Image (cartoon, rainbow, N blue to C red):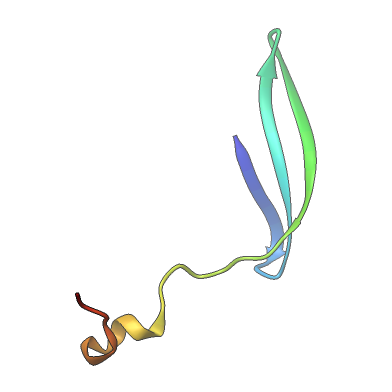
Length: 51
């Protein structure tokens, strides 16, 4: 399992948690930032690209 942990969206650490040979292993992968996947462009249908 991969988890972003931290108090703020712009100050989180990415952790990998897995079970190997019956024991839990935790590894810190580094710093990450939250990036919203929803664009404000979706609020206005005139901005949508259609083919």
